[in-house]
Amino acid sequence: MSDSTPAQQTRTGEAKALSANEVSEFLNNPHMLLGKRFLHTPPPDEDQEYKGMWEVESYTARVPEGQVDQEFMVLLEDMHGAALPMGREEVEFMLTHSTYA
Image (cartoon, rainbow, N blue to C red):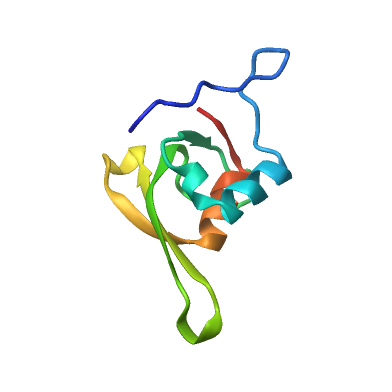
């Protein structure tokens, strides 16, 4: 995984969560995700097993039947570098519950 983005921190030195505007900007401009690393920490009440470092390796966009369909290949550190396909909604959830790494 690349490390081209410095961690953004709050004044107390904690990692900074992504704002709703940042999440929207990444989803509307997915090329901006490439080369950035995130730390995913879903809330305890969410049914998701994965926690940890991740990054988008690549993305594709198709327009079947007039609707844009995005697929992201996401590298999960816990999966030892294996890239998993994820849709826009899954990446949005990951971003919403992530901080910059």
